Image 1 (tube, helix red, strand yellow):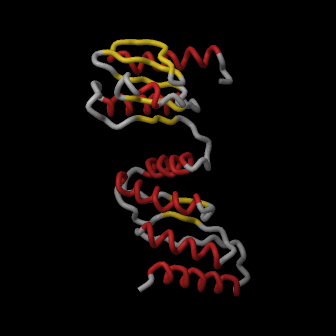
Image 2 (cartoon, helix red, strand yellow):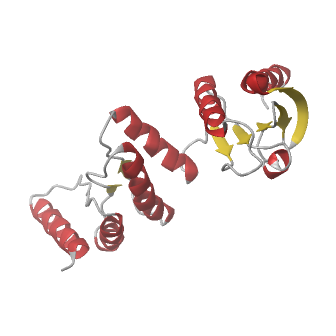
Image 3 (cartoon, helix red, strand yellow):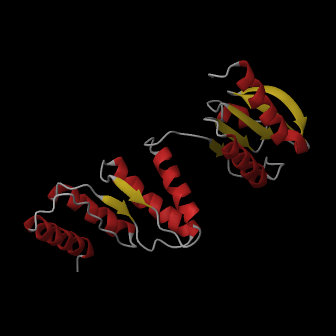
Length: 212
C-alpha cells in the first residue's frame, strides 16, 4: 500500500489527459490529511511534472492540531522549494487559516516578517502570568502593524540577556519588571504597567526614528 504513490500516479494521469486536450494552464494539488503522505507525494510530483503545485493538508483538523500538522507539512516542502501556492485547512474560522498560513510563510522568511513575539516557557523563577502577558503583547503588536520583534520573558535574571536580539521586550519580576531594548534595561515599572510601558517605549522610539 502506497498512498503517496497512488496520489502521484493519479495526478500524473490527469495531467496527461489535460495535455491531450491541449490544456496547458495547469496547477496540481495532491493533498492528504497525513503530513508524511503529503510530503512524500509532493516531493515525487515536483520531480515528475513541470506544473506548479498547490500544497497543503486536507482535513487537517481543529485550529490547534491542524495548525501544527499544516506547519510540519508545509514547512518541510517549502523549505525544500516544493510548492507554489499554499492552503491551510482548519475546522473553524477561515480567518485563522489565513493567519496560520501567513505565520508559516513568515517563519520561513517567505513573506514580510511583520510583528513577532518571542516568549520563554515558565520555570521556577517566573513570578508573573507569563501567558497572559505574551498574549496581550501579541494582540497589541499585531494591531500596531509594526515590523518588530518583541520578547516577553518570565524573569529579570536571564530575560533581557536571552532576548538581547529582540527590538524590545519586558521581563517580569516579583511585583514589578523591566522594559528593555536590545537586551539593555531602560525602565523598571510595576508589574501591572509592564505592557503599557513597553508600548510607550516603542512609541517613543518610533517618534524619534521613524525609519528605525
